[in-house]
Amino acid sequence: MLTGTTTPGDESRALPSFAEQFVSSPRGARLARRLAARRMEEWGHPPESDASCTVALVVGELAANAVQHGRVSGRDFGLRLVHDAAAGLVRIEVADAASAKRPPGASPSSCPEGESGRGLLLVDVLALRWGVEPRRPLGKTVWAEVPVRASAH
Image (cartoon, rainbow, N blue to C red; front, side, top):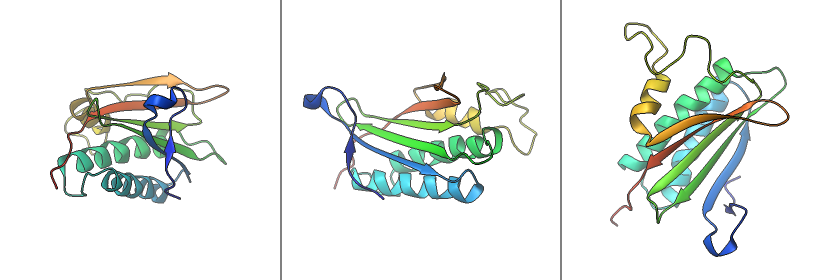
């Protein structure tokens, strides 16, 4: 399941990546978060490191949104991580089958007293940048770029 892959394109600058499909359920979202932390450890960022914790948190929030707001019956959600050690970044992409750019009422300025709705605010604070892109033939990909530093061993 955690096989090594690289991004397509310039083979001289192939970047380590991870991609997997998950059942669109809370259990699938938890598994995505756990596997992201495991992949970060394989890339030299121990589970207790800031980089690993930040990536796991962002993956958890985006996966939870995909399950709650992007769920389409019979469709999974996808997670892709790309580690660019030279740039000090991990790009996180969560793809679902729903076409809406954002769930209704969800934005980084959600009501602070509410029981939910702060996930995108967390992503906005933790990521250098993030956004939403349409997928063809259907759905969207929500992506975030998180800064990571090399861990000292």
